[in-house]
Image 1 (spheres, rainbow, N blue to C red):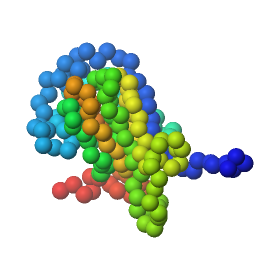
Image 2: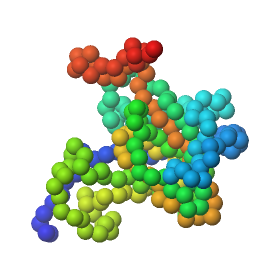
Image 3: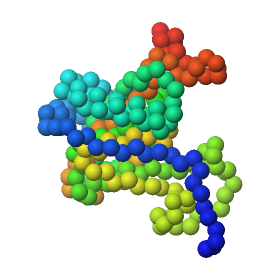
Length: 215
């Protein structure tokens, strides 16, 4: 109704920035990395090395990623922590027709994607609401067709990146990639990050000391 208002409560953040450095040597390194066979996988091709950015050629890129993760963690999510560290980082390829099924990133805190080879027409990343989560009842009517017209009624939100965009979102966000409808391979780099040493704090009985549980 015309006199009604709708307000946003607790939106989920998607952090977007762009790496301005030279990626020539970095891309050469990425292209030299060996990939697992992704011809029958719903995830496409994934690099055998899942710690890609540990390589010295990625030093400046790694520093940029960490600055972005820290900005997101401190100023957007308001996390209280001593230090962040990288978890896994991996290359992902989608051949024509391949897609990436909806998923989350367990056992980490923040998820990032670097679009170092984004091409015109590449599929957007898709974030999804999950029915039956702690925020939604299991009792609800069927939904109308999703025309992407109202931000509060969407089941899926699509974001189309630009070349060298780096995006960050909480690791619990369900996301995926629609089928690659181009005749080129879609390439991207995934990066996870979490707190170093501990997670949570003793006072709220939420503390995890990672080294305490190492065998």
